[in-house]
Image (cartoon, rainbow, N blue to C red):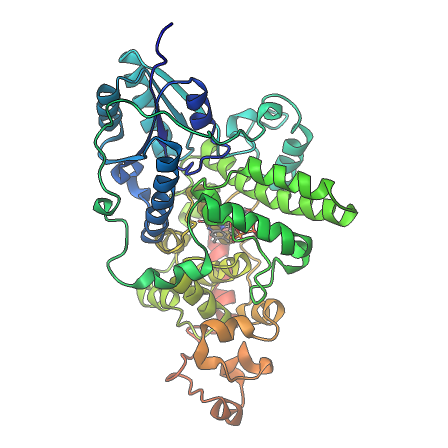
Length: 486
Ligand SMILES: Cc1cc2nc3c(=O)[nH]c(=O)nc-3n(C[C@H](O)[C@H](O)[C@H](O)COP(=O)(O)OP(=O)(O)OC[C@H]3O[C@@H](n4cnc5c(N)ncnc54)[C@H](O)[C@@H]3O)c2cc1C
């Protein structure tokens, strides 16, 4: 009988044991398994992980290390060029195979192709799998054989073909119960030596919002199914109520996969009435926005930098960096915008409705380039994700697929009044306005002097006066749009 050979599992954005096809199939081979994480941010080009995602990654890896140690094969952590590290780990362990789950960022697709070719040339068995998506981008196309650029037909086509191969085969796979480790363990760097944590105490409050790691991801999903999903449709636009799942960082890091969510939703719907079924379908539809974003990034790999709609390359953006800095710091004088930007800084996350409001404010009220906003989000969001962030910003700026038309300009005051009607969200993140009554909390600049005095607000001192007049800014945005039409 031949001794089963060793498999290296290269972990990337799939930091979980359950429903991890690369790990599952490596374990099924029966030989030793070497779980390996390689820190090689330079290989991600200009989109190296930002500061907030590095914080998350540190804690997620810490949790995963503990879990691999319990399974019997410790997580090996290494810094360096991916190919060199893989080759050195293969040499150290005598492995004959390398498995990983696929990523979809253009820079990494190119890198992975080179790595694969080199490892195959070394005589290794190399296989990649899908852990991150319900629908890989090349498996679906319009009737004309083109990529989708509108969400609803994309989603309908995905749902209609969900039971066809290759989708049918993609049920979640089990976590391995134990793993054999190789007789010679390769050397591992320490997690702290990667230097992922911020030097300042900036991230101290992040864990109040969400905790990294697969176990926390599964817990969050169960909590959301127990007390969130039924009301999701009514509550998802209310930042004051937090009626959303907050699964985004877990999904980004692959601590939880969309197949697991789909399965959990199916069980949830199956065990209940029509209301549950509707709620489950509604939430799953939202997960397909993430799928759509990956579809777009794969087929239009230039979009993190360039607008999908070419004419927007000529848009006359202003480059007022003082205003950019006021936006980043949550000091625009528009309470809902400031609350959102401060929520982002304090918690590493922002509610989707507010992301749309602050993004619209940046590109339409301040006429600053959407790339500036995308960059700031990239550095400060714990869920910063190249596909979703690009879609979100291009959608808001009106230059992407299925985008909000540029001429539709969000009014930050009425958006605040509609989606944070009592002002609780603003009070939480802009405490200097906390004493203002609901009637004025979204429009402090219009409040009578005695109301401001009673609430301890002095405009321009305790809270900024509005950076721009929204009505004038809107006219300027529409005029800028006209220049594209000429
Ligand atoms: C300007 C802008 C930038 C954004 N940047 C990111 C980003 O970097 N990373 C990120 O994960 N999301 C991004 N989004 C999308 C969305 O805001 C977040 O996915 C959502 O707020 C995460 O919170 P949640 O998990 O509670 O969402 P829920 O409402 O509970 O939705 C569940 C999941 O569905 C997916 N999803 C929901 N809405 C969208 C959407 N519009 N686009 C893509 N996927 C969606 C996400 O994976 C999300 O976790 C951005 C949106 C905008 C407008």
